[in-house]
Length: 105
Image (cartoon, rainbow, N blue to C red; front, side, top):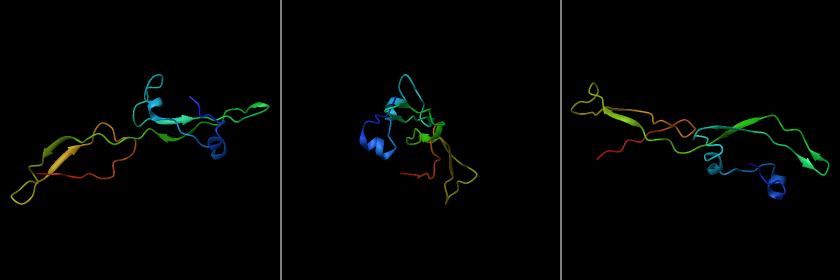
C-alpha cells in the first residue's frame, strides 16, 4: 500500500489518504476502531531515505453500533416518569460516544 508521491498534490502537500476499504479487507482485515501506524520514506534521484519513525493518530472511524439491552428501570418509573437504561453497542466507531437521543412513540 502506498500513496503515489509522483502526484504533485501528494508530494507538495506532504500528505495522502488510503481508502478505508483497503484496510478493512484482505490482506489487512483491520476492524473498525483500529489504530493505524505508518512510516514514510523520502525518495530523490539518489535513492530512498530511511523510514521515518512510526507515527500514529489515524483511526478507522465509523458510526457507533446501536445501544443494546434497552430496559425499563422500575425503581425510576412512576405515574409521571419513565426510567430507561441501555448498554453501549459493541463498537463506538473508534471515537467516544458523545450523546444519545431517545425516541419514543
